[in-house]
Image (tube, rainbow over all chains, first blue to last red; front, side, top):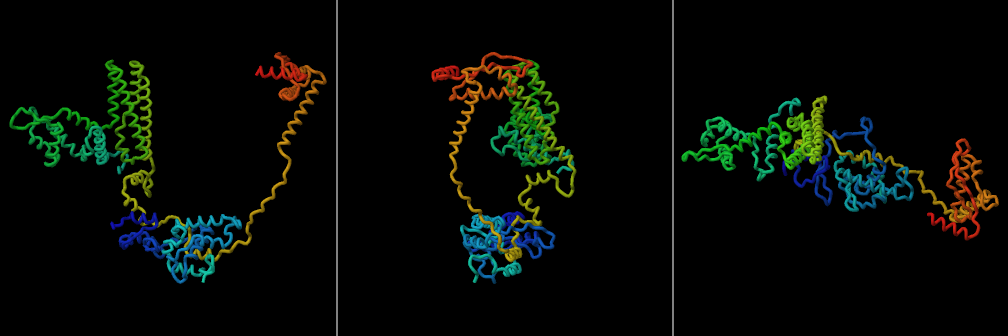
Length: 184
Length: 420
């Protein structure tokens, strides 16, 4: 594999990941560290392993609260759809959610629908809610938070970047994630 | 980068010169490698030319003498390969006076070629065009030119103008500043427009049939001059812009974008923190969102579909009834005018009605006339009564009459269709 130049890092930042089958060269680790990024390997079952760009501890830009940085809040539909995917694809709360299991897209959408109308303009018995959630799924797919494969949904490689402390925060709401049936 | 707008930049100019020479030779080159790619090799030809011109060269010069002349210019092997090339292409020709010593003479055509390349490095293609225009003007002035020669010259000149103008416009948009500066000196003909106008006048006097071609040349020249102004404008904009030392100025960005390699461009942000936008969904946010979600209490319901209205009266029936009522009204109005008589002259009553009363009555009468189902007609004569002081200044006598009997109605209809 040729010596990675700054172009490799730039490509990774643009596309989000590169598939790597061999060991990641040390030079690339150093380059990423210069920009505050850490290279993380992620393997989705059934696909080639890939390398994602994570953050070094303490470097990730934070927003909200008293940091003084304003970030656009995600819409309720996207957030709850993502929570439904988590609920469907994260079987064991004591483990890290990634890679999790695959779930049917319909099951996820039904989980969201079971919450009732989410937005102010939703009409009971209407089809708009389902369409809204489907659009949210596509958006999450683009952000690599999940990956859609045909009619199946899996958690995406961006989840692999979550640290243990972050996952702990999520474990507290594990039971309240939208699901179609009650968790065991 | 040149430090000031008008500094000479030798390397860039020499490269530009070689590109121009390649472009010059392109129409006759056998393959893409036909032109030298280093300007130094041209120096060899110049040194040989100088040797023939300076030394006492009657009877030609030997190879050894030429090698001596090129000592400071190139290496022995380079001289060898150039020498063979010159002989092969006919720049150096053998001179057979002395049997034992091979001597060479310089081909005058190659000398002309060297002069052309000299001129080319000083001034560019538009110069050739100006020369062509001068030659054409001189030929017209002396009366020696034929129609076809002048037509051909005008055509060549116009094509050259179009190409030069397009090239300048391309450079204004796409070229970095260094190329513009190198190109600047090839477009310095201040009197070009005047020359073309003079030529135009001469052509009009000598060959009026060629006036359209001469006019087209003028138009293209104006376009070229306009392109030249845009070109200079871009140079001046750059020179006049205030320089902010904390950023690169736009010319440098443009040059970098066109000239730098991908790795160099990727290097720029290698240490900067940035990412493509993504929804804000780190675990803390998701946990907060899920914990804080409350299902909605008040739900919108679709309003009930209204019942269909009961069937009403047929609308077409109402239209017909209205038409019938209008007809009855018109018939009554006609009877009112006729006052029981078969025919009545309405001129005086129209006059008495004044304006706009007359207009109302007249419209009503014409509507009655137009309804072919009613047995009333109106006749307007060809006279015109003019009364400047009266209530109505211009009036045509109008007569209304009733049609009696079906026969009269039929003849009426026949007359009307004949007139139509």
